[in-house]
Image (cartoon, rainbow over the protein chains, first blue to last red):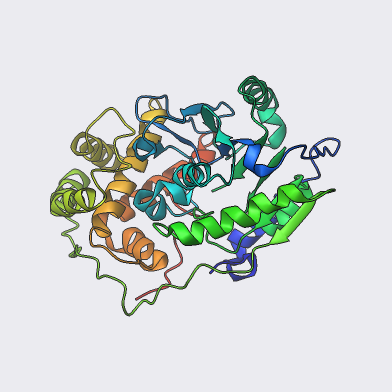
Amino acid sequence: MVRITDLPEDEREHLIGKKLPPLGPQSWTKHDKPLTDMRVALITTAGLHFRDDESFDFTDATFRPIPCEEDSRNLIMSHSSANFDRVGFAEDVNLVFPIDRFKELVSAGAIGSLASVHYSFMGAGLMPNAYEQSTREVAHLLKRDKVDAVFLTPV
Amino acid sequence: MTTGISLVRENAESMQPPRSLWVSFPLGRPLGVPNDASFQHGVIAASLALLEHRRGPVLEDYPLDAPDVCVKTTPVCPVSFPKSDDNTDWESRLTSELSSLKPWYEIGKKRRGGRSLARLSNLSIDKNIRKLGKYLDLNHLPIDELQWFKQAIEDAKVFYLEAMTAEPGDYDQNQIYQKLWHETQLGAGLFLFQERFAAHPTLHPFARIILPRNAAVKTMN
């Protein structure tokens, strides 16, 4: 178990030091359909991509598409931060990118469907506003894919 | 609409995403426990439930911690890292260490159904390790091939970690990483790269990607 108060002082100060103000004006979208009818996409900031894709640079605000039908076991990670565990992700992709869990939810009828493409960013070394252009691009792609809700995972 | 997981509560509090579930899990493990579908489904369900809220921002705490790993029952790292003769060069020491890890890397890879995070770089692990060793021997920094260096050290670290965790079971992360940083030639080499990058007038930010901030702190004997 890890809480911020359990971390070494320098690690704690670094993470709390990121205390940033809210991103722009607050937005709130009301759900207009039950979860069982929703189309859901996954977005992670874990720096994931397939081996043939270009790996993430030292700092990098671009994104990589993760087609839903591709075998997620082939996903690798080129995140720049050395400050988190890789062993868990090597054991199980779903620990970071729970695509199999979401496929199970679709099979069980708990959610409507999954996006045809999911996305990964690499969250390190840049301030949030550096991602504005690429996140707008992804938002556009999600709308085109008729996605209702996005499940976000950090790393 | 979005919902999601937060690993640092203080950051979610300040940035106020519309819906966020704070979890107490270690960085790198937002779903809590590898290969535990039931535990992961619990986390997902709690996060998806936030979509039902009528107004926000919503920040809720997930009530469960990831189970602690019992260090006494954690599998023993199958690889031993004997003290090397410091009179030999880095390239020799690193390639020799790599040879001792290879069988365990293959065993680990087989156990994971052929999955491995290594091979970000276009070069083989052998070539990467030799090249890293040469840079250390020459006391140079790879300033003209930083992207290769980023990929090569990432490949090397995951190759070692996957070999060290070849046996099935729950591993204590601290134990594994302490061994990697403080008992291996790779760890010693990475400290040297970090030191050299940190002293460079313009490339010092690169030192951050080599080792964790707290790597120098020995917490195990």
